[in-house]
Image 1 (tube, rainbow, N blue to C red):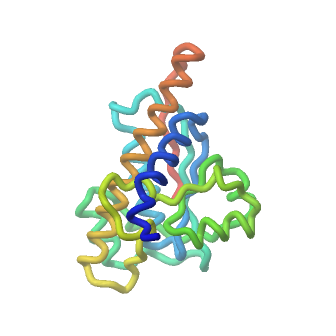
Image 2: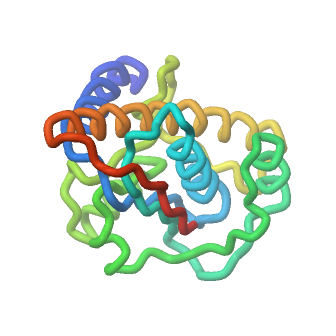
Image 3: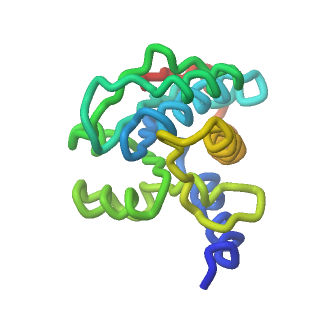
Length: 198
């Protein structure tokens, strides 16, 4: 069955899970190499969580990682396109997934179903702990995968980051809804800012 037909159901389930569960304290954003998609999504997530509209969200630690080597910078095109969208990737260096980082995360955000399967198979994470970011896209889709733009033209980076923008904003709103529900049920709590480690 084409993924576009399953998308409304997957999106509803993903949003319901985020809204009805406890707000995460630690989010790990994952892509293959941790130089294009996950650092951008993590940085944007950190920015969006600090906006006044989401002031009820308590402290969240945000990290990103990948399946390849340590210490690689983002490609120049990633830095350029991200900068045009207000996100600074100029100092990012890739980080590899390690068991301690994976086990510490309350929510793991991935770019495709193969990465989700790897995190479950290699690191023993439950299905409920891993979110395919593309499932949150509010627009019609052809694939749930957020495609890797590495070594592609600028237009591919722009399309990729535009889709990440849409999905991250849906994620932030769902987490804000969860935080507000939790806050209302427990009484007001002090507000703090997210901590970003990409």
